[in-house]
Amino acid sequence: MILPIFLQLISNPGVQQDIDPLTQAAIIAGAIALQGSYWLRYRWVTIHVPFRSAPVGHLVMFASRVSFFFGGALFSVIFFRHVPEFDMFPPLGQAMLKLLIVMAILFALFCYALELERFGKAIDDPSSGRANT
Image (tube, rainbow, N blue to C red; front, side, top):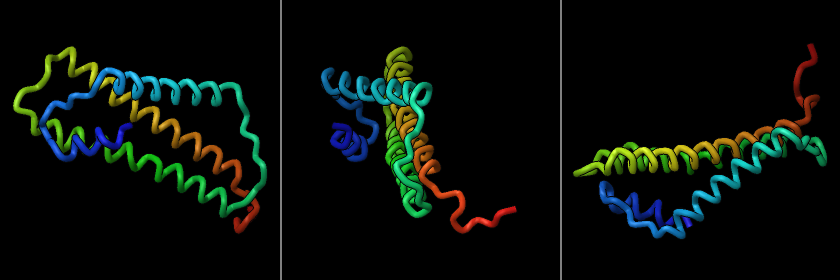
């Protein structure tokens, strides 16, 4: 759902994007679901480690970092490429609402990356290849 919007932003810098309300609602609902799931799991669910493995733990932690590439790309396109091209900015209230939505999406992606990293650290075998001091 977000990829076509991302491609529109890249292709048409400075042009206000027409995103239908259903798509906007789905994006906002997705960010809320990510946030809700993250905080519920963070607060009340302990991580169950099915096995311990340093290579697998490192791969999961790598996936957590890679997953945030999209957030960084989205931020870069919006704030460094798209916004400076505007001929006229939207009204302040509308601009603040859009900024809040973008920041909520980025924070949800950040929390997702944190959860993957937390899982990767739990899988990581603490005795593999580390000096015992």
